[in-house]
Image (cartoon, rainbow, N blue to C red; front, side, top):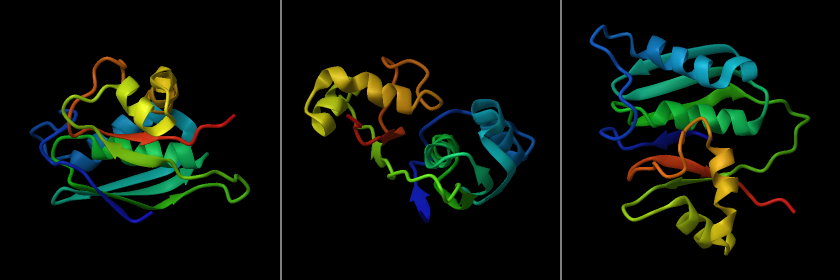
Length: 148
């Protein structure tokens, strides 16, 4: 998957003044994703986050990358060292950065041809988006493939 770029001045205000950014990101990921990631290790240096550990699915890996990247002060996230089970066949979701004027229904219309499919996007991003009516420009989300 490589490095993912994020807008450094957008996102959740997480970092305190103590300089323990990696620990704060790790605590946030553990709170949001629970035991879906084991052996989680986080490093943070000059805006770049490196994640390692074992994820229960590709979706969890993508959510960890997005959660870490949607934090103010983070410009890049590397999830190459987050492993997923080889037996799970999953298609990578597309990442989308929200722009001014977007809504989940507008994004659903663009990707799925149906604005009423916005709950699919919301469900795929519940850890990143707490309220479907409260998204912001610069936030990056997952756009999963539609399953029949």
